[in-house]
Image 1 (cartoon, rainbow, N blue to C red):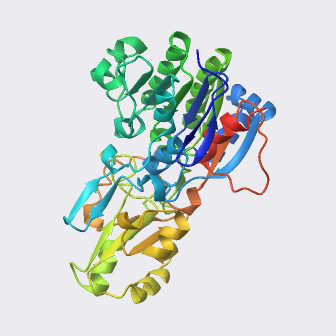
Image 2 (image 1 turned 90 degrees about the vertical axis):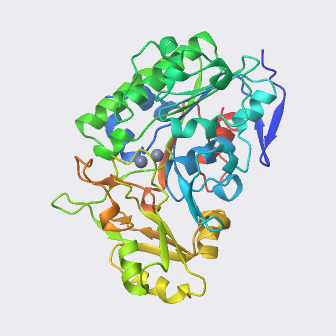
Length: 414
Ligand code: ZN
Ligand code: ZN
């Protein structure tokens, strides 16, 4: 039984011990309108009740408004300048390679999940996509039965040694779901409800995929069906006596022309044209192994310039392009967005709400985009919901972030 009198400190922040199971849910790409529309349509009665009797906040996520930087911020309680994960990959100047950042060796801060587990709490983590699993599960020890961490995508290969559970697929009792389906997220909730019933972990972290949000706008039939699905499982978790805290890693916006074609600034083509080929290298940190639904097009990019190239003119010229929100040099951009300077380029570029950033047009495979482009990454996707099943006493005047979730849920719930 967990002791309720102790608190722990993680990355400089204090957290009270959970008094009852806490379920933190990160709904990938959940622009606030999705839940607002679903509640208004009457298909999210449970969250509708949470909003009424608990707490319904709008807070800022981390920019770049991408999945990994935000999920890692939520579970560490600190921004990327401290935990180091600022995108799906970065360019390593020393080795001249583009490096995927989904390996825990790039994580510079421990998670509060592992800190609680080390202090005696039981912890369960279920993610939709496997790309997040090793990062979220970093530091968890599976030898004492207190930690479980697996993904829906790879539930079929979960083992006691690596995940704290063997045969997770059989345990959840659903067939394997395609990584490009809403069923991958439903698998996460079914697993969460079952784990709560049978293991009753002190802390649970559930993370979905934004497959639906990339395709369908808030209030559409498909979006409402997805949120109705989630609502049912959240109701079951609440009925099991858990506190539920719901947030998003980032929002989502349409980034296409009236005719449905993607509205994109192809930065690599533009910089090659201005500077000559081989002078600038554009990195799109949204790029990951699952690009079918966004074609690697988001609203945030960073660019490296060859030694000796003064960024000032490039910055000014980029600022004049239609659809650009802001262009900052590395120091300014990392200061503004709390990012690690050693993993960002010389320029940090953010596009406006309706515009995406690309590299070279010919490199983007848009054949999988069956619906007009919806994506994220920029400032326009920074506002996310933060909803609790209990009222929150919030200290006034503080800028609230999605990575304050555990602080508010553990230290500030009534
Ligand atoms: Zn995401
Ligand atoms: Zn996405």
